Length: 275
Image 1 (cartoon, rainbow, N blue to C red):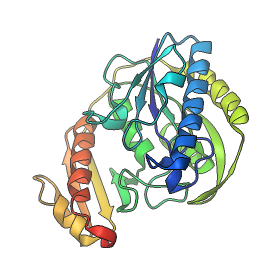
Image 2 (cartoon, rainbow, N blue to C red; image 1 turned 180 degrees about the vertical axis):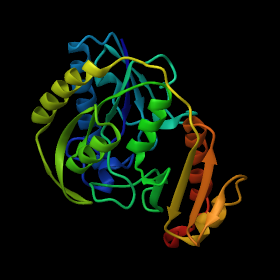
Image 3 (spheres, one colour; image 1 turned 60 degrees about the horizontal axis):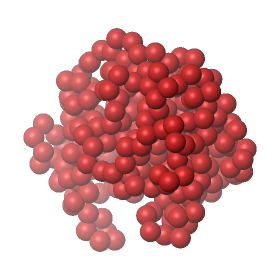
Image 4 (cartoon, rainbow, N blue to C red; image 1 turned 90 degrees about the vertical axis):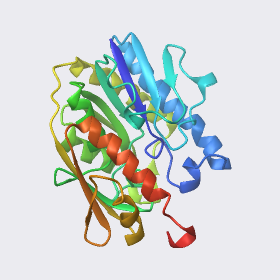
């Protein structure tokens, strides 16, 4: 039984601040250990329930945050950037289930460090007319490959969001959102036990099924008009109002690749503190 863990960092135990997740800062060095601890707890739970091969796809920012030397030796880790499917690299390689670990709510929503890909520059994303964070987008991609979401961890609002886009998945709240930059947190000992138990329960719904590729429409609203203008240069991407763009794709895989291109191009149009 092969399980993929898509591991993000904003929804990890104790994380509440920008510095906690930005590479090179002193807090980041501390939270790398907590991040690795959450992942190890998940690996333990998956193996408790019969998983035989666990692959962790580092999905946060530089995608070089987890401490390989402290990783559970039963797991393998895909680290580094330039992955065609980004946060979901490996979903197309005969996995029986996927875990969204350390996830967060989407841009424009309440939640600790809420955002969608571009931290302060995207203020809303919609998939087929439904407000979508990274979790909903990635769940749609998993569904296209017939892969169930087994577990989602993050703050309490992330878990509430997951109950809508992945109702069969287990959820574990490692903290309770107070504001975008504050949370009521539990100790790593407590959250590790909860994540391990949640992962073990989640394996009950593991099992690849026949996926189905369908067309999708993605809409993105940026914080500034110049970002929308930059993205609209891409063929098939249309301007929507002053700050928005939209595009259609024949499959969710193509939609996510196009989304990645749009955000990369828009990010290159940011100029200093004015964006």
